[in-house]
Length: 213
Image (cartoon, rainbow, N blue to C red; front, side, top):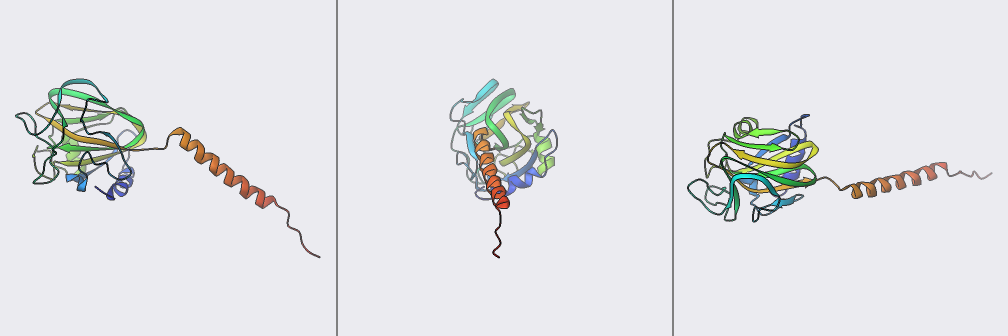
């Protein structure tokens, strides 16, 4: 995804509605290959461990292809060589997100119509809905750039978690990263800085001007 992410994320922000995120799709991740973190984002997980995962049923962290799952594709010849998340039929799992996450980047493999992504604010997307919104394919193709790649979700308010579920075999996720908003302490420092600049400007405006006679 390289330097395109900030631009695409800003575009997605223009699509935000009250409840749902703006969402765009980058086939094959446009160069973003987990666990590499795109510029300006923070890695949440590359699923090397179960860290951050909770409320899980019928899911596993796996490597390579198996009878019920396939490693997400980076392009038409290369699959993810790392451990990834696989959610099987009837399964689900929730991933906690860092505070201030208002843009969430999720690399999916072989998107199927019966896959579901849900966020803590109530937004929910099936694979079929994602396909209709973005032009991606929900046919479960294990190699196609139209069904393997990066989905960028942008919210008007931060979300705290994302859940993955599937009613069929299977739902594969290679990695999750976020574009965090500044921490409260950072906002406070920025506001103090602006206040200081405003005060200096005010003092200059009030400074008396002497006129020579």
